[in-house]
Length: 433
Image 1: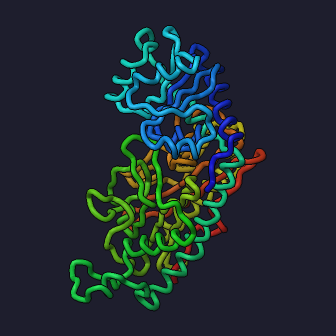
Image 2: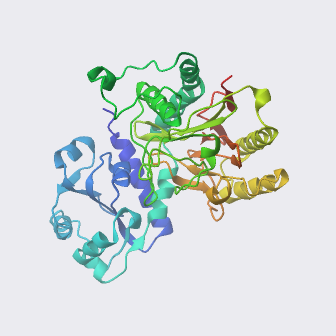
Image 3: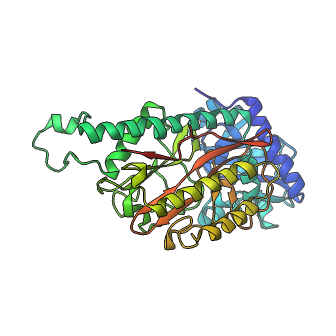
């Protein structure tokens, strides 16, 4: 079991304290609520509240799973609670009281409005001063990965590249040539089962299932976490042809139909046909850390790819080359975005860039780690300079009406004042001849 090393835990807590002291000097401590942020700072995915005072030791309050939390986390102070009213009492008994006139910070996005009101009513300090949201501080600290985190990110990228650039195209070719080769428990159990038909054609859904099988053998963590409220992801999405321009709800460029209106993920029963583009945007999770990659395929030969698609591919390659040259420590994220928009004008892709028409999103890339959608974002108004240790997924994509989408997405590591593509073995588009 990969428990978070005690020194790693201490380093993360010291970093958030230092950041708070420099950027929120009026605060005496912070409360953290989301399970993934609690995990980041403690090493356990606890159901509870993490209190980090600037002067005393942190305390993890656990509503359920106390023994597991104590086993997984190296924190000294881990205590059970049933009501928020017990938090101040426990702090007082430890001779580390929360003083009534203190100003305190909270992870605002980590708690619902209803629970926040209840929490504030139980902590006396909040009766004298309003809480201050410190979510941006947490996002910044988490955006810079330690070497402990980076090794998981690199391994995730290595396995994702192998899956999408080598194994999946081989598996698709095998299916196209030989048909269904997998064993079916349902079919063997009862040959009269008609509610679960076995697909004979190669559909988006079947490609997603093949990808999941490959990912499983490569030790995918079988979960993909999102930070933004209401956003969900289950492995990712597979779409082909005009499905790639289908209107969707999520904050991404690639269109898709999905399994069902309430399950807009993986892929539909749309069948792969000749001279059709296919995009596989399937996330990889290794030991809790994600990498993001979209691999584009074309079911045909290179000479059969339409000129507009070739132009879109040239554009995406040019943008990725620009990213490799500029995605470095000290660069301002929004400058990369603005420079990209200038390239968009040169290629006349204004209504196609980062999603066709209503699917368009106003960013080029995003940070990634314990969740898929982290800081920094390559978009307008993101002005904090990039730092070594950040991992950023960059995804130039062009929606093409009556064809589909062409694009490139890879995850990059900022390291030693340079950038490294950790999710590619060198293929921009793969032809399934």
